[in-house]
Image (cartoon, rainbow, N blue to C red):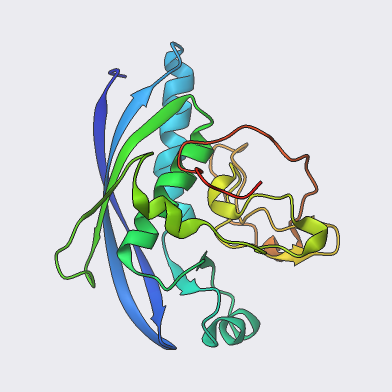
Length: 211
């Protein structure tokens, strides 16, 4: 794999705006720099980023946490969600995609820049890098309850969660596992939870995040 490459992809998600549902398709372009010399590791992590957009983010419902329709959809559907700290405008989606992509790559590949546009976005493309002001829009207080207050939100973690849910034994960690070749959907994903230690590593894209 070249030291500097660009890669383009797309994924579909239904967005919820003012309690209405709209079909949307996102186009994404990322500039990548591998930091590991292992070709196998580069390939494995590149497959991970492909699966992040194809399987994890794709075919979801994207919704602001405070939208009154969100709890209704959670209760009455089996859909997967992308839960945002603000309404689902493209600059917010670009910021969470940039952060999540860097998180799941675990510094073996660095996303230098991510560009995102959408069918609903009136032809505007948003570009996000580690210094972008859009990342400040992700700063949020009290994302978790007091019990889990030291946990990072999903977009700063390397698991496959795209929304956060507190369960009796811990926090929800996603529908998929990175430890399998086929990454199958687990139909019992709501049972997935994990208590893990808080990592002090600061990810690019997590600036000004309350620790």
